[in-house]
Image (cartoon, rainbow over all chains, first blue to last red; front, side, top):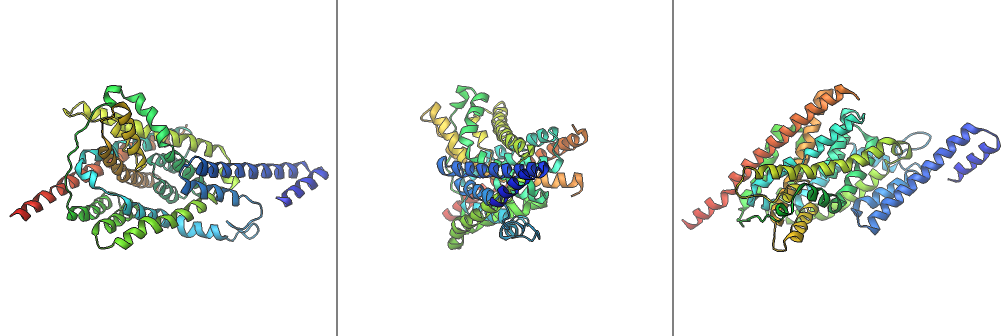
Length: 392
Length: 47
């Protein structure tokens, strides 16, 4: 910083306007990035918005913008620094998103899905936002891979967003995409209720749903992750890394003989990878790459994606209700986004606000875990289809 | 606006949504079939 100020003063004293302007702009950009990093840290600590990710990202955004540091790359030689090395060896090769999915799989209980299998369709319907946002991004002038990666923010699923952006080699967008995905995920309790209220009547929100408690055998729970991985792999081979990791984590959880590994995956592995993932992503937020109109648009479209996803789930539930005797509470459709388990909780709270005796939590959780599967499948579809169309 | 890109986007949207629904329909079938396993095993236990 002192070097920068010295440069600025000497340029001004020598009347070198071009250098003074360039140094001044660099200085301003650095201050703006410090403020953005500070805001992310503030949101993490004060507002509790995804603190495990936003705090490291915010700190990473600050340290990578300190002039003349070599934490990302050496300023003169361009050789990778510590975080440049971490990025290349853990994110660019998709290692961290895959490891996170093993941890997530070890945390998920798919039992509610077996009790209300119909909820699986909301995991598909709520992915509408991904594709709708992709189209909006295309209209705004983004390229097809960029638009696809932006749409995946609507998956409400950070690792899939990072995975797709990486597969399309969009390093400069990983920072804004991750910030958008994780920020809006933490804002689900604020974003979803108004959209749901806008699309449903009070009577619809009061609909009660029957829930039959069924025992699910251990064999079913063991076979499910294996069969799901094979089916996804056969339909979309690109999905095997993510679905396979998710289901591997789940198999460890359900097999009953690997409790220590299951605990390690859901706690230690999850914490360790989250810690390094956040700060490594933060260090990609260098001012030159981050401060542009694309970042602003990505933040805006992230919100659009979450709104479209919520609307897709709710409207699909209303559509299904046209043909069913036993009506579905359309709010449950909104839980088809993969922000697990926050979205399910939001829906239950809304149902309870309308009718204190209405319990839709199990159905919402089932829709929510379906959303986890749906988002990975949708991300993989984008990878396959965009890749084929543009020859990646 | 690049109409060629938008056309490709519509193609991705159509096939993408179709693909997501197709895969989740397969998952639905798997879940329904597998959901029957406990009934059969409990019947076997009773026998």
